Image 1 (tube, rainbow, N blue to C red):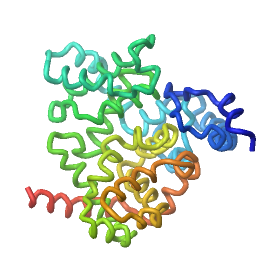
Image 2: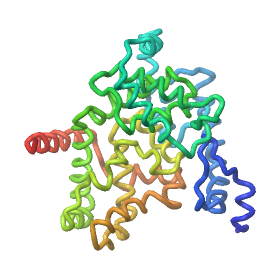
Image 3: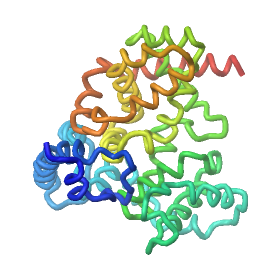
Length: 339
């Protein structure tokens, strides 16, 4: 392998989405991975072009599911997400609705909450800087403001800024980003962002139950140290792995999330934990456990997104929506009983 210095010269310091690579970025390892991944991407792009035959409309099917699991090329990602999530159908049924929301009644509290988070959203992305032209902060503000007016039960909640930001980077469209955010917050992630966040708390408990069944030694470690799952995985759920896993890996996860729903989040979480089970089990304190859960979201296992995505469908074993629904019911009832 050539020196990291020469790889650093060849690999751009800014990724295709506008993010600056971190100081400790392993350019040589990334170059080696990307040279093989590029071949896969090229092959998938040809297959997708044949499947779509020039159409920008995608509907769910067995073939589409298989294609999505193997990765959606960036140029088709927006139309695939819009099609399989139901966002395109919603947008078609409600022409002009997004723009009417932007003209809606002022809500200073909502506007201020969103504005407060603007500079905290992707400071490492050149497209979100005030000096950028165009600066995506205004686009992000509009999408979040419109959504807060559309879904007043949720309004705005921290975490939604990161999700909307990724949607904007992929779709390059305010209106499409709005409808995809609606698909996620309104349908795919039940009750994650409501003020009580009951859906989010429930799903963290569901993950705990799945770990108890599939990886009992990890569950015993957590119990033994009195560590609540929310302490180590809340950002995985609330940010859908944004700012936690590498960008391309997150987008590959979202490809499946829009098509197959929230069980994908559990598959990713279980794969991360199972792959690093021995490492996690070496932890000797609460702080150590928390640090190890951060560590397992870094390194070649998560950077090599194609292999990682294959693993999420094999490593956790069988995981039906029926199982998740049943666990959600029991975990939600327990949380409500606790008040």
